[in-house]
Amino acid sequence: MFKKRYQNKYGAVKQTYNGRSYHSKKEAAYAMELHMRELGGEITEIIPQYPLRLYVNGKKICNYFMDFKITLADGTVELIEVKGFETDVWRLKWKLTEALLEELEPGAKLVLVK
Image 1 (cartoon, rainbow, N blue to C red):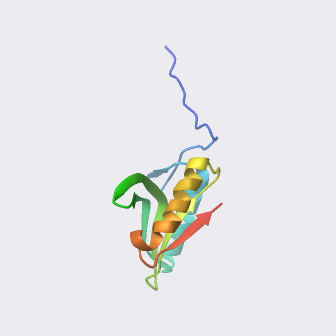
Image 2 (cartoon, one colour):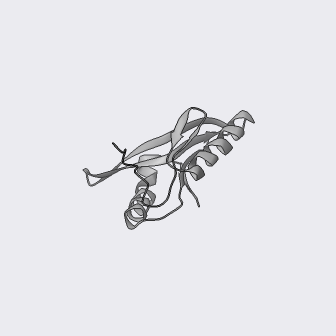
């Protein structure tokens, strides 16, 4: 009997770094970069797959999982998305997140890594 092998339709290959699985090599490489910055004292906290609940006028539209939420040593918060291939659904969620950012994470900055 053969095992059916599933491949990501966009060519992303899952990767493990520091005991955690990431959706792509690019995301894992960025996790390593963030970890090095944390070891250097520039970052105080890293939260991978940070969930955002997107509501408009009290109605839940969707969930959006940012690849990373980091807190820098000065207290600044960044929500980071590591993107290889942009889909229409992703673009819509990104625009919605931009519009709701101050309500979701006051003072946070959105960062897109391509």
